[in-house]
Picture 1 (spheres, rainbow over the protein chains, first blue to last red):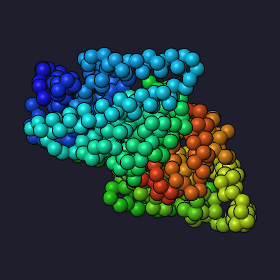
Picture 2 (picture 1 turned 60 degrees about the vertical axis):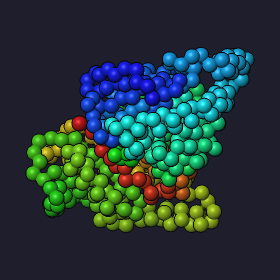
Picture 3 (picture 1 turned 90 degrees about the horizontal axis):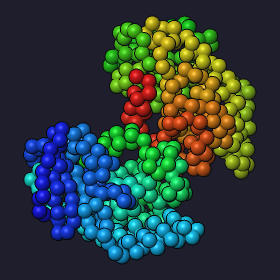
Picture 4 (picture 1 turned 180 degrees about the vertical axis):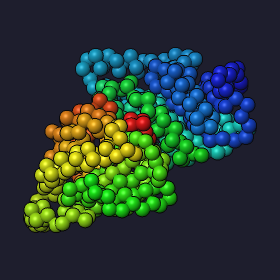
Length: 243
Length: 243
């Protein structure tokens, strides 16, 4: 783990690092000492580890929940080089959608393919970050919607350190088998009028989670219109299960 | 409004009253003065105004939310006399279910019929309670699940004073038309494995609400297995919209 920089804003430190060739960011309360629960966040498609939707939520997890938060760039995103094979598949998928094919199954297959790379990357990030004195080997939460759900479901299924997960804006097409292996509490967010994830796919993914405690939160609106108050709910959910 | 008794327990006053021939109960913070937001609660089938599921929640609404809470016995329940016509229909419905008919449509039709009586009763209770110095004419919330949803949907649709409603464990069969007239924020609770309300009926009722802000909370388990943490959520929901 190589540290690049540390900046501070409103009592939150933002530490940029790389682990092998994966660029990452860790947020923590400025000057915090001793171990604390950690949340790993997965960003959305076309976004990156410090996109506003990630950084803004991370800061609230730090300041209001007392968590440390870590996020890394998904291959082909943020500071990572273009990924030729992923680019080729993405271009091909766009052409197939333009030709009238359904988007959801193509996107699901693509995300499942990328997860073969991100699951081991994210597990290595957990290993490294948990070595830090101000994080430690305590409970871990996962937060990820859209692409962060598609990659998050196989990650949470594979990673026993994750004790609670907020997932959403994803469907069952590629993820149902992995979802069935998830046993930690899940808060699952669904947009009722999601133009990218058909309603039955969302309901089927919720159905598929193996967890005894799982809650579906559905709100009206399109894919990008998740209401603000769901972040309050996520904070309380993590507080209930990780603290 | 005729006051029967006032008892106090852990700083919560429980005031029994009757309004015409409707027995009711009002909970409020002991010694509270001045107006405060009010929550009207509708009890479940076979229960009554001070059943543990009502009284326990009401006390938390009072102590943690600062609300006044009122509940009344539904006709044929609690301290109210047996209602011959309702009894006859209930008996007839049981026989039809035993003979193989589906329960949900029968229950829905029955609840819609009872609502013709309870909607005006509950509105009169609001009128009377809002006259009290320690309640006042401020914002009103409604909380009701199961029968409390079946009777609550037409009540909330008819009553513009209700600014936020927690409803749940009910289906669209009888209530969809009234639900479409509801415009206040709604938190709608659904049990994913509800043995009384078929899953598509619950989803259809959520779909039917006319409200711009509505959230579906679905949890695994049967009709009576609503998780405790949904009460925390209801408290915050009312806090957000009524305070």
